[in-house]
Image (cartoon, rainbow, N blue to C red):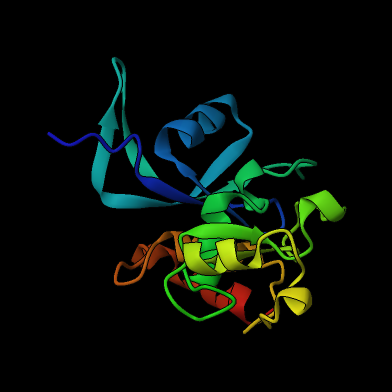
Length: 176
């Protein structure tokens, strides 16, 4: 029997704006505490506790405005940079498996969405501790901070799809 505690759940803030994803386990804790409410639950799957049977939530909403960022991973982590750039080297267009600071850290470059780009090993070593201009390696695209929706959908992966119950929430977000 498969456990659904780690299935993905779409999380909305109290205004209905997408914040990201979470696991059923984390969301159920908040639901039981009364800080979240379930908007859509799975008609097929349930989780049994000693005293009750609970439907598996698919979309939840915070009851009150939240004043924190739900996911620290929405920052420019290695994983999120690769998702944003789709593992494409920003210098040659090949498969990128490393990150590169456009303005090197040794020259005051910061860890930000706009200063980090995916690079293949060859280009990363060729560029070294120089700027793209100094290395004669122009960028194929300018890195920018993606919105939460882009990261949420990217984390679903190519070829996989998000649950059907998410569709109306994602369509609403795409029109904003």
